[in-house]
Image (cartoon, rainbow over all chains, first blue to last red; front, side, top):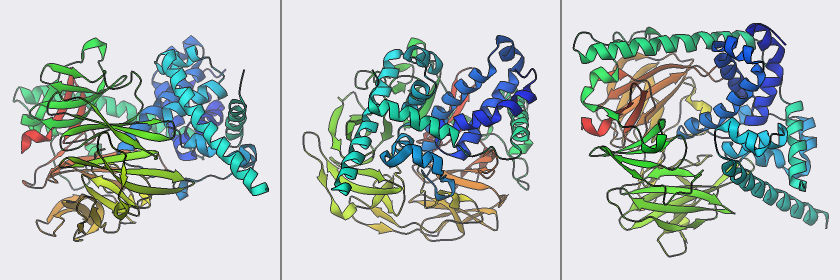
Length: 167
Length: 394
């Protein structure tokens, strides 16, 4: 593990920006999240490094930042999915397939989205997610349940649409 | 046991991680720069607090950090020094809620605040009126204000439930109805409520206007379709995302959002009153940064200009904006006060480079750290939650 902060940034920036992309769904916010979280880590580097897992600290900060940034930006009425921000990747498109799940995840409220990322990408338990976000387990389950319900509707819709197309 | 959608989701998120765009060049340097900015902001905040304490004792005039000033602005004071009568320190909430955001100044010392966790709260002097009884414990919905009511919405199933509760008295909360939409904005006219329900398909938003009344099914108002509420009953068309009449700040957001880069000025909006059908188009006096129904903010070659929507009361300030920046203007409900903020372009770090509050009536200007909400600016926590209550400067 990198001992100094600058080395840590260089070593882990790719992974952290990728994580930011999973959280936010666009490359600009991904870089923004990673930069801000790293800047905060830099202020506490000795203390966090001494505890042994600075990357976990950054990821937690990014998840929390994503929720709070979204709240602030919503007041500014940002446009979602700006043409300038769109990012198209054939690999992702293939993984997303015809279900449109990635797009549907992008349309979830950020808190729901973060809960899903922590649960299904980070593979954290609901208790761990609750600790990370400073909420109760009931909140985590509620958010996850609502989000999954929306995603199921999207999948069912896509399946029905595809079935219709094939008939 | 995991369901199909859960397995699909894991696969999709992993694919997104694997195929994320590469890190832009200069990333480590940007992190270093942001660390420096955070250190300077912290130092400036400490200096500002010390200055305010000195100002309270009448010894010194507060000056903001130099980095937040436009080049030719000259000495501009902090809002605390310019409008001390409007600076209010609010009490902590009971139950251990220390951190909260002030959403609205409702007049006569009543504030709507949103704790970091849990339901919104009305603060009336030292009296705290909790709204927990009507909000679910973990309420994830949207909050708004109309002339007489707090409005909140909550996505449930395949729609959005809309509720209102009077904020002027202790009247009960009422379920106004459920709209087949993803996002809802509500306005109030007499005994009626009107709501725009917005739904997104792909990148395309569609907007439907409804008339709402408690105990009745929402009634579609076809004449209002395609419009998005942005300022009370006033709406604009052609906006690609929902804006809320009662979600603040009250700002017109054109398409595309990046038009707020000053070199790509916004076009003049046309407003439609969804209740009366009346239309209004502000007169253009300069390149528009943003408009409310009552007034516009713009720039002429970078110099900040304000004017009434009728074209009257034009004020050309000595402030010059950096045309490479993004700028936004946020008006209070009267259109008298306007906050102009500038940020570096999104491609870098979106750092705020300036934030000023103008009184269009008196010409007074001050620097401000905080964002305009409903007639209030949350100034943060300086020994207590502090706000600038614009209703106290009328």
